[in-house]
Length: 226
Image 1 (cartoon, one colour):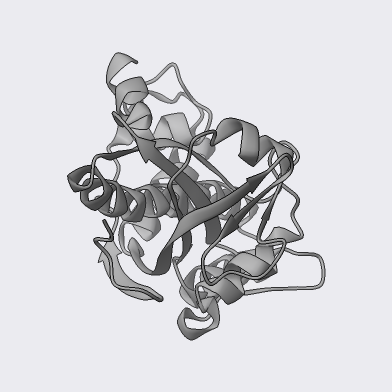
Image 2 (cartoon, one colour):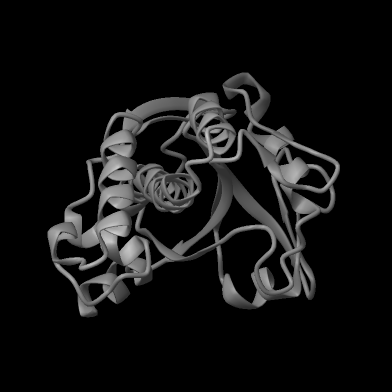
């Protein structure tokens, strides 16, 4: 049962602003609940500035596309309407065993983040730039998961639950899949492209593949148990 229409589906939204506790976890400061608890004045001020900037840049654009798995090989999934090699990875085949559908997602926080980070660098605001860069990584991950949740809710109506997610560059999922993912979801229409090094531009952009099979949502079950 196909719930989504065929082809690329665009969406736009905003990530709910993270709490101070979430901000500090994202910045690798796990022992404080509030920024005010940080003793070093310079660090406290830089985090505060980065946090306020980030709160004003939480909107995102996304393209996603779902596809039925039509053939499974030891090192590759073949899915409908996809080029050969799109999901060539023994890790994906092993981790997504039994997958009936996959979703490919591309998300970006946009060019504004690059412009702001570059400007901070030119002004010598290294600490604020570092913290803002880390918050951008956190927010684009949350944005991708927000799109993933939308897909998962509709897949659940067909009795399909998430197995998990992977991004190019993890395990043996090669970074070279990045441009294939971008092409498959027409990411260029939201301004996202892979460069020669297989990195994405704008910098606060990610691609993700999510697997679904018959049964309960394993990703949600793991989240609720932690």
